[in-house]
Structure formats: structure tokens, C-alpha cells
Length: 386
Length: 131
Image 1 (spheres, rainbow over the protein chains, first blue to last red):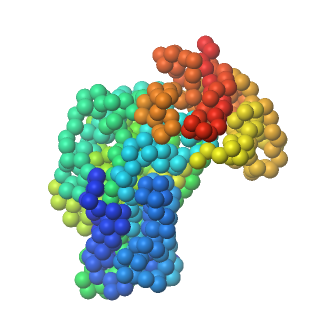
Image 2 (cartoon, chains in turn brown, orange):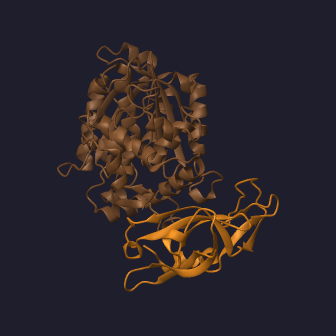
Image 3 (cartoon, rainbow over the protein chains, first blue to last red):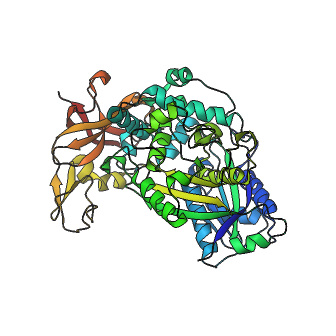
């Protein structure tokens, strides 16, 4: 297996982008990634997308992207793994380069979610759960994570204020991210007093509906170093994917995401790193409780201590382990299929020292955690400055 | 989207509340499966699930998906039946204040979903608090 590096990145604005189609967004981020990489040709494309069929009545998106990039005849493949579609697409691109099959692979994650009304969007998202045995009970994604939150608060005595601290931090970070959906600062009281979506979670505990796309170009590390106009290559030091039960009810433990612990363990081993070696992480905060569980399952904090740690500021940009300096899914926005790729883009900016106001000092090793459904699919990727 | 054959296929679990039990390790599951997720045995028997269980966690859904707006707000819980099977059920006939982790419930047969004005009415299991 060859060592693989990220050599180009591209990302669109995230938000309600009425003026842009999914096609416009995917082409925009793809061109930015290809141009910034300096590669003269792309050998293969992976598209991470969750539900083009229900959001924009379009399947077969990978062919459209290749067509509209003028890259006809190369393989182009769409990957669907719910909210982890981007992370899984990235892993497939990694494998294609590592194996020697291709020398330059484009990964684009994209989702266009705002052409449908909210109840339709909620319905589309609910398809990432078990349709027959969760969906028909009327459970929603906020509902699934509310079940986790209720159990977590019950077991560890965590408070609504502690959960709210995740949203407050991520909005604060997003306010300094020009590409983010939200630039408004919010308070603990705003979060606690917001409209209830699925008790105990309110509006500000939930990531929004978002349009957006993000892209990266991968190359073998040795060839990336020879690129004359390439930005500093960032090595993929560890990458892993794991699976858990589709239905939340079927798990022995509702507050530990086994797919996260399994994928993390494998990615740490591959990278020869431990949680203490990570300088910055982008984790899947689709809901406030999801960030708290993630920072525990990734080994940054003991189980049950993540909520207090967040309240104490340990996950701020200047904290013990900066979590979601980009604003995360909560503040930056969550265009489902794009999220896993956007996390990689944000980490590459951090590791190149180009994150401006959001820069974590001395960031040399970064971790991305992308979770699909209520945790049935997880990818963990560790990136390193070389 | 809901079609008559699709619902008809779900008859054992949705209308008769059947589950599966692994004859090798004893694990019980809802719905039944071909392969035991715990020991990988294919030696599974169809069993009637008990009607009594305990709430492990719950939520009240206020923002409902398409087709469920008229039910909102409604309670959904993860329930462990007395034989260990875990499943998701709406909690009905119960004041929201009486829904708590650890409360005992019994399964009841209720309307799950109405397929538009001309479609079929889907029934299935829900639960109510009994203590």
C-alpha cells in the first residue's frame, strides 16, 4: 500500500443557497480542489451524497459531476452511507490511490437540502434509520438523538446547560468561518429556551438543513511531493470505518457509539497515534449530544465526562483538545453528503496553518469523525503534517 | 409509498407481535432474523413476544416527519420486553409526565399510519405505561 496525501481542497459556502443547484455546488468545489492541487489530470471520482433522489429527484449524480467537469470517460462513483457518505467516499478514494489503481482521485461530497420543505426534509433524513422498525414508529433523527441524550443525562447527571455549551461553542467558532451557515453568537439561555424539537433537544441542539459541497484531491505522497504548484501535502496517517446496528434499540449501550470506538481504535493503530497526540478534531455534532458522545468515544475524555469538559471550555479553540473549530455541523451547517469531506477540508486548512482566526496553535495531527444514521456507520480519519 | 404487499409482509411482527429467539444462545430479537447477531447461529425460532416491558429511554417528538404531523407531539421509547428483546414503540394513553426511564409498559394494538385518503390504514404495536 502506498502512502496517500491530500493535495487539493475546495469548499462552497454552506447555507440556504437558493441561487445554486446541487450541480453548481459540486462543480464549484470540485474545480477549486482540482485547481488548487496542481494535478494535470484526474483518474477517478467519488461522490458522497445521501439522498439526491428525495431532495432533488436526482440519482446517478456521479456521472453528472464527471460530465459537467468535462472529465468524461474516467470512472465516477457515488457512495451512500447516510450522513457518513462523505467520509466513506473519502475512504474509497484513499484505497484507490493506496492500492496503486489511480494516481489522482477527486472526492466530492454534496447535498442540496433546501429545495424541499422541512417536513419532507425530515422524512428524507429519517430514511437513514431503520424504515420498518424505527421510521414507522414516527421517530425522527432529533428523536433518535433525544433518546441518547435522555439516557446520557439520566446515567451521568449531565445537564441541559452542559449540552447547550456545545451549540454555544460551535456557533462562536462558526461566526469566524466565512463559509459557515450561521454567523450569530448564541447563549446558553437561547439554546435552553428554544422551540423543543424532540424533548430534551431543542432547535439549537440540532444541526440545520444546509446546501453545500466540499472536495479534496488525493495523490500518492511521493508523487504529491513532486507537484510543482501543489500546496503542502497532508498525509492520511490513519483511516478506518466501522458499522453498528441500524436500529438504536438493538444496542446494548445507547450512549457509547461502538462504530466510533471501533473505527477510532483502528485508525489510531494505523497512524501509530493515541488520543493524546491529536491537536485538533472535527467531529460529527449533528446534535449537541452527538459531540459529547464522540469526544468520549474517540478517547479525548472518559465516558460521562464529556459534557462537563465542554462546559468547562476544554474543547474551545484554545482548550485542551479543540473540537470543531470550523463551527462543526451545528454552526457551519450539515449538507449531509458533503459533511465528511468538509471535515477533511477544514482539517487540511488547520494543518497547513491556513485557518486564520480559527487556527489552532501548532496543529500537526488532526482527526475527523463522520457518523451516519444514529451511529450505524462511522469513519475516523487521522491527518498529519509531513 | 406504503403498499399493501409491503405491509402484508410485515404481518408477523406488526400484527401478531412475533419475534425471534436463538435456540443456541437464547438471544431474542424483534423482528426475527436469519442469523443471530450475537452468536451467528442460524438456528432461530419464531416466538410470541411478551406483552410487558420496561422503558429504557424515551423522547417526546414535537417536529414530526411527513405523514405524522397530526399525531405530534407524541412519545417514542426504547422498550425492553421481559424476555430481553429491545424495540422502539410509541407510548400512548399516558400523560407525558408519567413517562420515565424504568416505568413498566404493556403493548397495545394501535393505528400506526394512514396511507392518504384512499390508502390502507396500517396498524401495529404501541405501548402504554401501567405503573
